[in-house]
Length: 124
Image (cartoon, rainbow, N blue to C red; front, side, top):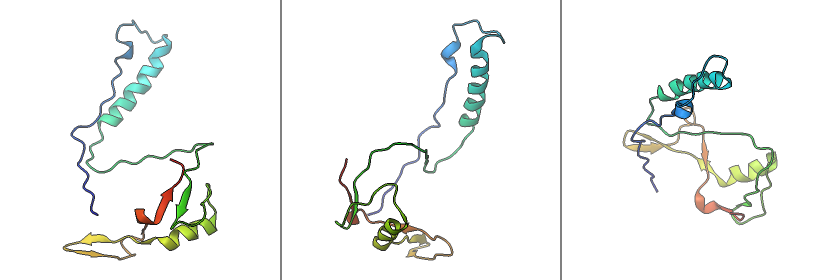
């Protein structure tokens, strides 16, 4: 099934209006925060993109989603090499569009994809 993603209609802006009612001098504790926020605001507002956005982070604790592959045993997290091989065995090389054809060419895209029908998350 093909999924179509619409690009965002506008770039999200971040405002530094939090301190507008205060008189802020260079000694004010918020002055440095405002300066840093202003730099971040400028950087974020200068981004022009219509593509997908991804983010990541490291969490010392996390809920186990209860991942099972093709109805088999639970895959623990963090998973080990053997678990990764079980997941990979259920995957297929991800094709991509080239003109009017859909092809697999690992010199262009060496990516694996797992069909949603081949896994389940038992711990919503």
